[in-house]
Length: 354
Image 1 (cartoon, one colour):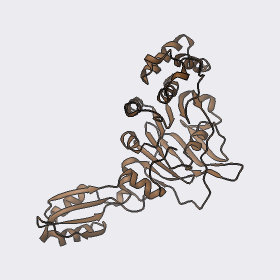
Image 2: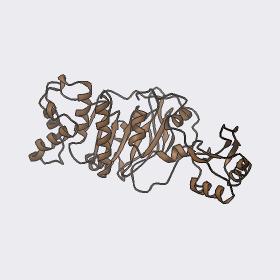
Image 3: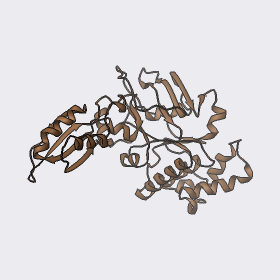
Image 4: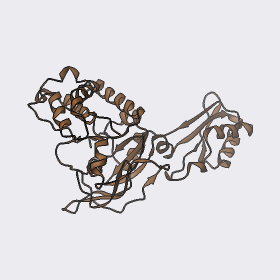
């Protein structure tokens, strides 16, 4: 059951769009869009022709600054907002044509939950469960209690919703999305209002769901949480999908460097060997006190869409240096953080909420 409060406010001014860099091929996708676009009556474009790909079984972190179009995209995926153009497929079926068949397999928390303030948490879940024709009313109470326990609200099940804190309200929204097993879970800012302990619990819950086979698409402004839990990342900016792919591949493709500490006499040989291997921008740093020098080179191509097969693996680089007679004191691969990639693409810091 999808619970929604308020309207999407993400807008962006259209501008020439760069090509989306899509890392890695996917075949069996939980979410796939083609040229998905949303233009409001004012002429503002919130989402501009994006090709979103969420593989089945992935935990997909959906990132972007204010006005980037994340929430509008999520609302279009769920049929809450009609796209201006483009196509949406959920769990392999076209939307909205297959909505009646697909949406019962999708749980969602979008822009904060909306519940009846004078009903208890359990009663609110029972009310939502009652309108789901695909569930068995005889097991409604058991499902509600299980969902409440799963999000840590078992002790507050009979407390009125109006007496819930912001974090408790968010937990109840998660419980509503978990009333029945889901193949796809779409969470928009699921840790909003939660304390650090609650945030950790949501992270563990997402991992448990993914381990059980549920695909999770999570939009969040908590970079640390995304880095810890997500297997795939998509970064929005100005209504466009700027980059998407596996988390490790995205960071590896944005200016990673191999850094070798070698004895002074081997510096020239190391430099020549790195260049022979095709690594770019190979340089020798000044000598350190121990007499060694640092030789570094760009391991990743600056084109994030380039094939990784064209670049040598770190272990191959180390082996080639040894075979060339280069002594190695230390060998390290330094990759940019997800935050660095985000700032590079969007030009903004990560203190954003939507």
